Length: 331
Figure: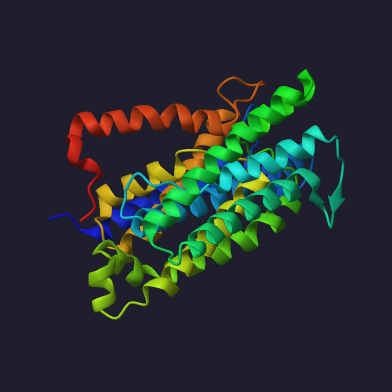
C-alpha cells in the first residue's frame, strides 16, 4: 500500500528543486559568486528577469493545478480542466479586441492587454453564472453546458476578430493565445499574486467539501454539505483565479490536467493530500517547463504554452496505454 506522506514528500522535493534550480537555467550561466558579490549584470539578470519569471511560473502552475483539481471534483469528471467554463476563451476575446482596436493603456502599472483579458474572463464567467441561474440551478451539468456554449461562442468571435485584423495584429493575437511567461520585474507578480493566492486558499480550505462532491450531490447533501454554497464558492474562486493567470500569462494548457492526474496516481484520491500535491507538482512542473522552453532553442524561445501542449497529448496517450481505459475514473 502506497504511503501518501512519502509520495507527498517526493513531490515537495521536486517542487523545491525546480523552484531553486530554475533561475540558474539559462543561455548564460550565472555563478553564485556573482550573486553574492553583487557586481556585474549577472545579478540584475538573475533578480530582475529570472527570479520574477520563475515566481510567476510557480504561482500560475499552482493556480492552474488547483483549478483542475477543483473542477474535476465539481463536475465529477477527471478530464475537466481550468478552461472548461470558457474563462480562457473570454480572456482571449478580450485580449484580441484590445489588439484589434489598437489600444495602448496602462493603469496602475497593469498592462492594457492584461486588463482587457481579465475583463473578458470576468464577462465569460458572469455569463456562465447568469445562464446557470436562469435555469434555476447551479448543478454541475448546467454549468458545464453553459461553459461549453460560452467557450465556443468566444472562440468563434476570436477567429472573426483575427480575420478582420492585419497580419501584424493577427500575429500578436496568435502569440498571446500561445501563453507565455515573459515577465520582467515584479509588477506582473503583484497583479497575479492576489488571484492565485486568494483562490488557492479557498480551494485548500474546501478539501473536505471536494471529497464529498465526488460522492454525488445527493449523498453529499445527505451528509450535511450545502451544495449550492459550495458550488458557488468553487465556481467564483476558480474562475477569478484562472482569469488572473490568463490575464498575465495567457492560456497555458494541460497544466490543470497533467498535475492533478500525476498527483492522483502518487497520493491517491483524498483531497487532503491531492490538492496540495497537485499544487506543488504543477508549480514545479511549469517552472521547469519554462526553463526548458527558454533554453532549448536559445537564443530563440518557445512559448511555454506550446511546450506544455506538446507534452500533454503524449502524457495522456501513455496513461491510456499503461493503465488502460479506466485510468480517468474517480473513486
